[in-house]
Length: 436
Image 1 (cartoon, rainbow, N blue to C red):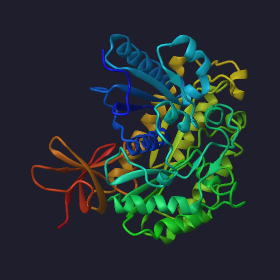
Image 2 (image 1 turned 90 degrees about the horizontal axis):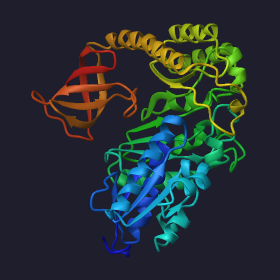
Image 3 (image 1 turned 180 degrees about the vertical axis):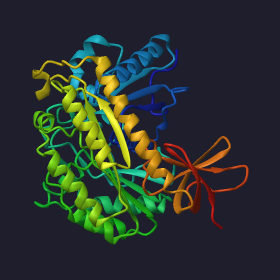
Image 4 (image 1 turned 60 degrees about the vertical axis):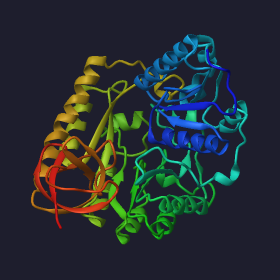
């Protein structure tokens, strides 16, 4: 049995879920290291204390979080670790239930209880560290959360229950953070929020994303700025005009659309129609013809008929998005959709998700084939086996296409921008050689 926690304890922080959770974990790590804790990320070996930062978004994520907590609880029973703490979305939403079901956990904390977590670990919350976050991603890119929470009322989404109302971070704080990252060698900033385009409404009484982009684009050393998670209803096109003016703002927009059937969109409370969505996409592409639009769809929503789904399939064929992801509907307590019967069978949800991805796979291959022979700029992410692997401005880490360059024939430095020529393509991979 290890000696019970002291200020010299080793802490392991396990992060589950999305990039917004990762930013929260990085803030925890920064604060603990400033309090002289030795902290590792996603490595339980040799840890005295384990903190699990959970996800509670959909059933699969909740299951992964619970299983991870149970595994760590078993380590505590065995005496491998001394203390176990749980934080994040699952803990925020189901704290009372978790305390009853998994009492081996020493304490549960919600999404905004970082000071309480630090206090339990006898650590001080250091306000002077705001804007100086450690990162757990590769050193050349970092996620920047520009706001917390969400004011939207989508019927299927439990995020407002776990993250609360929309709260923007001041522009000066985000610029300070960007400068800190640039000094550390970060070359790509990935802006994230539950709803990017709402940014600034609470503190500036106007949508201030264009102003934020103007100031971030002026930070020396930041080569790419990427936008994630914009809401389509009443989308402010001045954001796209601002993107078009700055070479270091990627021609890339992640905008989850969720569906195309007007009947389903209305039931989802998405505040937009298919016709309005088509017009929006057309306008965005008119302003930036080469923009890559990434979107996600939700299949199997209560009452989604075969006709609704076929309408979605046709929409995907027509719009020819550059990047697509699909979620299967998860019946979430306390959401508006929970009042409806979850009447689409699991196997049908799975079949529909696979069908959308089959359609997109063909589109992706066709679009990639058009790139053969083209010169493109990539950011080199890593070396894996016989290849250096990078991304274009049209691709976000972990979810989008990758560019592979033979490591047997060429050398590249991880974290560098490189010019390459595309020589071959698959559905989601590009093969290239450097231009030197």
